[in-house]
Each structure stands twice: as C-alpha cells, then as structure tokens.
Image (cartoon, rainbow, N blue to C red):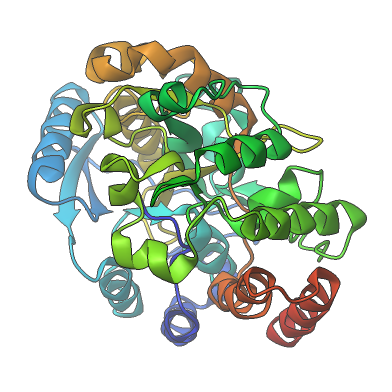
Length: 423
C-alpha cells in the first residue's frame, strides 16, 4: 500500500503540454471527440453502430491481477449485447504512457486512475462528464456508494469517474505486545491522546509504540474538522481546526513513540510491524498482515480528534472525452465497475461490502470495523495542480513540522507556495 501522494510537478507539466495538443486537435469543448459538433452543455449523440462497440480499458494491472481482470472482462463480454471490452495492460510507467496515448489521439476509452489524477485530467479536457449518462442507467445506484469514495471522482460538481476500490486506513496492532506490556487494547473510540499514551508505554528496549509515516498530513486536519483545501478549492489550511490538527501531529512526533522518518524508511515501515518491532501501524484495510505475521493482529478505526475520519486510497475508472459512443461506453463503465466491486476488496459500496468474508476470510474478524471505517473514510480534495501542491505540502509543511518548526509558520509558508502554484 503506497502511503505518499503520487505524482510530481514534472509529470503535471508534461500532462499540460500533452493535453494542450489534444484539445487543439479536438477543436475544444464544442466537439465531443467523435467528429460531430454539439452544444457545450450537452455532448452530441452518436448513432448506434451495427454490432458491438469495441472499447479499450487501460489498466496498470499485471501478472495475477491482470489475469483475474481479463477473466472478469471476458464474462462481461459474454453477457453484453452492445459492447466488447478490450484490456490494455500498462504495468510500468503507466501515467507517462497514458499521457503519450492521449497526446497521440490514441486514448483508451477507459482508464484506471488513482484519485489525485481526476482533477488534472478533467480540467484539461481528457475525461468525459458522466452524470448525463449515469442518470439513465438503472444499474447505477449513487446511494449505494460510501460518500467519501464517490466524491473523489467529482470535479466542479460533475462526476468524471467511478470508484472500484477503496482502502480505508486502519490502525493495526500487535495484540501480543499489548498483552505482554499490560496495556489495554485499542478501541474504535480512541483519541490521539490515547494513541500517544499507549505508544509511550510500549516504547522500550528497541521496540516502538507506533509507526506514523503512513498517516497523511491532511488526516490530522480532518480529525479536528479542518482541511487543506475545501471542496470548492479554497485554501483552509490556516483555519483554527486545521492548525489544531497539525499541532496534534507535532505532539505525536515529539512524544517519542515512533522512529523518525529516515529510520523508519530505512527499516521498511510495514516490515517493522511484521517483525514485531512496533506495536501499532496505520495501513490499508486490505494489507496482508494476518497472513504474514506470527503474532495475533488486531484492527480498529484510527484515532480521532473532535471528529472520526480516516483516509482511503481510492482507485477509479474514468471515461475518455474522445470515446465515440459515450452512451454505450457509460453503460459498459457501470457494468465493469459493478463487476469489479465483486472482485476487489474493499468495495466502495454498501452492497458489495460483505464480499470480504468470502474473498478474504482472514479479515472476517474485522469486517464490521472496516465497515465503520468505510463510512467515515474519504480522499483528498484534490486540485488540478495536485502534483505541485503535494510537493509543497511535503517541503513546506510535513518536514518542517516533523523538524519542530512552529506550526503556524509552516502553514503560512505552505499557503504562500500554494498561492504561487495556483497563480
């Protein structure tokens, strides 16, 4: 499970240049990419072709995951009467190759994206808005999704992608270490102060109470009702709630319950938990600790401040703005997404949630806890220049706070950098 926000400024710049070529070639927003001009408010409809519409799906899946996905697609193709899905596997340099295809007017009809790429691609015209088509598809049920998962596919109040997996971050703990030290086990109602207190009791003799590298900086702001950007793209990092969360972050760093970032990175983060060197680790609900460790693993929702919330890594599928039959493609997208919900754990829907009990039986003990986390899980309020924003957060906020710099000063410096990026 990746814990750092992916994407760099260089990639964003190349994306901008690539998409400028695409938009110029496509003639801007008055053309929906199929050669027919339509109004800016409603894409022009293309006539239904004879036979099945062939639709390419770009995925980063490789090896076993690719074989499983291809089997899923084969079953969909057998049932479908109006489309045929073709898998396009790009297991290495996925985003660089994807942007090259888009720039060369060879974009796939569908593309897997990590949540942070949706605003970038949507703002540059590479993705098709879906709401018009989704409203007429009976198998699409927006209210079945956990809200936090569906939100990451939206930009400027329009839906551009559907989530197919959501990995809420959970607090894993080594039950043997807790019991040996006589420390009460974590609960779903723990606060960050409870986390610190337990961690201090468990830090001794070359063992640590916790690892905190995996916790996104923004998650501390959420814990107190703050954020980095709000849903409308306004900077709210300097709100009292955000400051309170970041001060708690610094308190945890200073508490001594965790190795510093350099030491944790050199020792392998998750490996430190697997080998019994740390008692608590925050990672994705789908992580395989239950299968790989020799101690008894427990799991609860991460600690809270004034609000219980957790981060979730969310994968989505978006539809290209150049797909030639958007109505048929949208139906295929819904069918494919619904099928993936029956394959991938953790599903971002309420109806697909109990799949965990059969596909990952070692997680059955924690199903209700993961469900509780899914209800309060969310992604970031990503921005079109998210790659540069991530860099600013790391350089001007996360590192200074960990190094003991005044929180408000770090926040002010970060906001100045945000303003330069946005300008």
